[in-house]
Image (cartoon, rainbow, N blue to C red; front, side, top):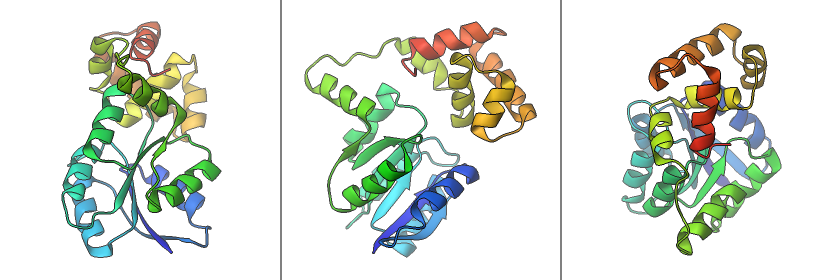
Length: 215
């Protein structure tokens, strides 16, 4: 059995991962945590083989948690999951020693395969992430618009998800449906995105998302 712990601050994401992985006979979901600090204790007590690690979380982010976990004796294997494949996040996670990096929209069969592969010590990368690693190794790595990436880094993960949907041209109702939240929640996130990016224009948000290379 492969013992798995899920670390993500979004309860809906945790539920989705449980549904994807829970029916597999060789995967044992032994625990979960909603932030990095809690994850440290859960992982210490449960000693999983694989940790599915979100990046942006309250209290302690996933990159810090990954670094701390991998400094321990006999650490678990870390499979980083995130909504976006921002260049700086990818490279930082891999430099810290993460064993894999997948986007959260990875199809369920691929997600299951990834957990099994990481448990066996095999590296796993989403296709877009693999391209970034190759570019970095060949000296062609260059963020598209560092200033746009820095601005979007001020958003929470949920706000970033909404911003990406805005950039795709989705309406508030469509975003609510796709992210399984209420329209009121989407509107509140859009308002916060506007405030953080200093705009009241959805086109401006879309341009920032594209400049940061998130589409």
